[in-house]
Every structure is written in C-alpha cells, then in structure tokens.
Length: 456
Image (cartoon, rainbow, N blue to C red; front, side):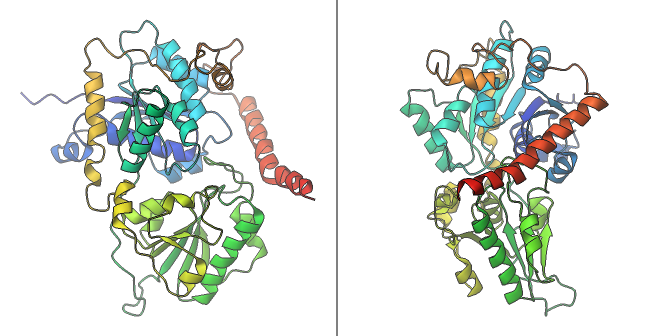
C-alpha cells in the first residue's frame, strides 16, 4: 500500500497592509508544522500549508497591484472587517493563526478571539511579531502583542529585548521565540560587474531603497533625492535606481505624504536614473550597492552580502530609525560614497540581527515549528488567550483600543459593528473607493498645506 499523504496544516493570516501580508504569509510557510517545504519537494509531496488570507479593511488595505508585487500566493484571500474575521474564526477550524497587524490590531484580535473561542475544546496556535526592524515604541508594541502563543523575534538581539520588557512588567515572557526575517534569501552577491569585460553585461547598479515615512519633511526628502540624482550625474556609467514601495494613491504600512514620484518631477534627472517598483528581492538580484536611511531592505542586502550603506547625512537619530544600525559598520554619508568609500559590515553585529549570512538561515525557524507542533499536541488543548492588558490592568487604555475595532471591553462585538455576509455590491465598492481616495487626498495634499500654514 502507498504511504498515506500527511494532512497539510491549515493556517490563517490576518494582515492590514501589503508589507504585513508579505511578512505574515511568508512566516506562515516558514513555521508550518510538519516536514519542511524542501523535504516535501524532494519526496514529491504537496508542500506548504493550506493558507487562507484575510486583509483587514482600513486605510492601508493593499491594492491588487501591491498584492501582485508581493508575490505571495494563498489558497483564498479576501477583505474583512474585524468583526467578520472573528466570526470566521468562531466557525472555522485552523491549526495556526498568524496576526500580522499593528500592535493595537493584535491586541483587539486577542481579546476578540478569546471571546469567540469561549467553550471550544480546541483552538489554533496564535502567532504574531514584527515585519522588520523594531526601532520605536518597543514597550508599547510588545505589550499590545502579549497574549499570543508565540511572539516572534526576528533576531537574537530582539529576543533578548522582548524578554526583558515582558519580565520587567511581570508578564510571562515564554511566548518570545527567536526566528529571522521570513523574506531573506536570494543568490549571494558575486561581486561587481565590469561592463568593459564583456559586451552586454549590465552596468554597476546603485539602488536607493526609499521609505514612505522616513524622512518626513519635504526638505529632507528633497535633499536625499537631489543627492541620488547628483550621484547619477557624477557616474554616468552606472545605473542609479530609486526603489519605491508604492505608487501615488496607494498606502503601505506607513503613510506617505510626499511621494518621491512627485518630488522628482521638479528635477531633470539623467538617463541613467530610473524609478523602479517590484519585488525587493528581484531588485537586489542586480544591485551592487544598496543605500537607504533605515529600510529593512538593508538587512535583506546584508544577508546576501551586497555592499550596504545606511546614510548619516540627516544625522543618526531615533526618529529616522538609523540608530538601529549603530555598530553595524554600514553607516556612511553621500560624500563618502561619492569619494569611493565602501563600508564593511561588522560580522558580530550582523549575526545578532538574524541576517544569518553564515548559512544558518535554513534552520532559523526550526524552534518555532517545534514549539507549534508541541502546542498542537498539548493534552486537553490550549488554554484561553491571556493578554497582559485587561480591563483591570489597563482600564484607561484597553477599551479605546477595542472600540476602534468595534469591540466592547470584554471582546464582544458592539451593537451596529460593521459586518457583511457577502462581497460588497457595486455601489458599496464605489463609495468605499471614493472614501479611500478622499482620505489619501487629505493625507497627501491637504495635511501638508495645513502643516506649512501652521509653521508661518
């Protein structure tokens, strides 16, 4: 008799932006219990979990183009409100649930799920974490995520910090589990290309990885763009790319009030300067030098041993996030780059960041998989979710977080909470698009004008 085919684990991912969908879906594949995807592929079995994706309706709900750019597929994918999602979780059975949301969203779902799963003999293992570098609101974000069965830390450094925060407030820190960023990969950097060595070879390529909200001011963003264009003019033999996260009108994890696409219209860039979109991994395939202020793309680049620069031109400041790279060996200015400087990363720092350039990346998620498998096999099932924040411990904070997702203090949906049993009709879709358009117009056009008026 042929060997029985093991059941594919069933995983749900709830995300609220394109970046968090990428992190959540890729994490789901990395932590799925059972044989690894590589082992399954060698044995000819169907690999990977059965993945159902849910996009939380809001200002940053990804567009079809953004989802296509992320490139992560799911067996099903639909947009939901918080209350709709909780109803699905009460009715469906999953092995694992990944909450890939902003901290307040995670906290609301933990309380809502605790209520939705009352009386059930079994529930999914609930997993959450961060999509990249944690450089602000460490305590706030962590405590809002407390209560999940696993709180994933993308590096050894983050794992130590996460446990210190939980233990410092008397909260259980056992959920903290060290992993790595799930989207690292790609071929290691093979060295600079010499266009003169072989006709048709691509030119040396410099990529600036832009961020939607860092820096914020028009002055600073214009400065960075001007330096990038000047670098292109200074090196006409190079290809200089501005890698953008979204197109005007689209939102990502962070709001972008001053898109670089609009700022560049006032310049006259040379022919070797281009704007590019698409998957970051594909852009890194042709990158010889990655430059950024503090983007997670720097960690992707370091993982592949691509020369990587974190800019100091605007200072090394917490508000920019580049303070996270102190000790990395990657800090440099445009003046230094133009003069030919190439930073050498500090290997110890890189190792602590979970970048795993030493070849150990394949095993980075083993501990999480083993822990999930153990929880799924726990006799008597899993206990109710127990977040640190409760109406007793945070009576002036928690109710407001829950109310934003139309939940009462006990996690019960409030009367009149938006929920739908079917896809929105044409009229509702038009109204929703108009509302989003108005919001984005306000963020990108009206808000900056009001701010400038306030500075007069």
